[in-house]
Image: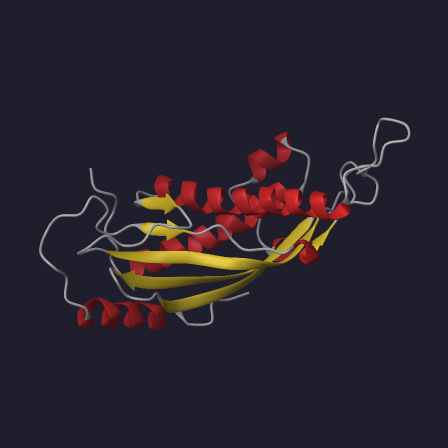
Length: 207
């Protein structure tokens, strides 16, 4: 559950990376962004709620399981990336949710990416005991314009073991589902990104 590198190691590595790469002259609209990628998934990691998926029309087949799994995975991936990005923006950083964005010339970026190990819908008909969950492998990297990302640290998180800090109000208003589980994990990832950024005096968003 802890990053593979200690906070001190992450700070030291990032300082080396920043010091070894010359920064070209010139201005950039996003000189120090934090880029959040949408986490990858495959339908095979999705466990569907068996009590859903039927058709209301007699004689018609329900949504095929693989199609349902893809929809559940896409929704969880969106919720995870959105939660990370929103918390980073709220904390004052220039966060961008994009699968294609890269550091501009003369800029550098922190990159947040990863993949789902598990997405379990739980049992949504059991109100109060739905027990949905997700598990992810995430990593935080540092990238300069034109270079490949260099990994700083990695995380292995499971929503069943992630504190509910920051989502208590949300939990009271929404029935538990995989999207809420993804939001909790996203908040936990964002906290580690923020800690890494602060340790390295990562600049706030330009005003």
